[in-house]
Image (cartoon, rainbow, N blue to C red; front, side, top):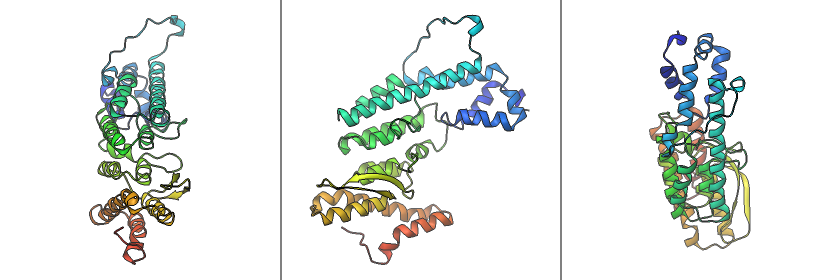
Length: 303
């Protein structure tokens, strides 16, 4: 049945899985479904997929193709050109990630203007892909950049907007998908923003659908000291741990205020999951474990 569908329609159906998982999905469908395997013999389908992955209009620039130096014997098939376009997509994403890391960690001058310029140059890219070199997504790289919260906040808004409106993300929940991508250690952009004491960035991520319940392995520095803390905790647990160490180290309450504001945001969000989201039993128990110290009086809501 699928073999008789127009290539444009089949490509549109495949578009809903997102570009990041497209190669694995194509392989799985060919191995498990005979009708899909027949549909993939249509060269027009691979042309549609290649045009979607390449998509020069998404970056605002027109890319001209140089004349091919391949002989006819070595000419790529339509599926080969799609694989080549997907490889180029990943290479562009890695190059953009490297540029963002240089601005955020080395030059320490990352700004929304520079980030927009980088995306215009390298885009479209897979913003929800974890880099094997930096062990993070571009959004995580922005969240841990060595600049102030005022510079990071518009960059986060720009990345969420780009991921929602690029043709490479045809998912109805693409913003939530981007902010919840974690590396193999479970570290998410929300955990980084909360542990660094960025309440406005945390608020932006929570509004975009960030989940405060997952645990992530990381290392964060205690304010005003050379001490750092390593462990695997949820965003709220990281904030509580940092507040305890800072209080023990004699950090002034004014310097702990940002972490206290982050804690209030997280408590409100976790409570709203129970009230409004109708969570599963496991998520409900996870929320109760987070809020239990406050219900029992061992911890106070105010700072």
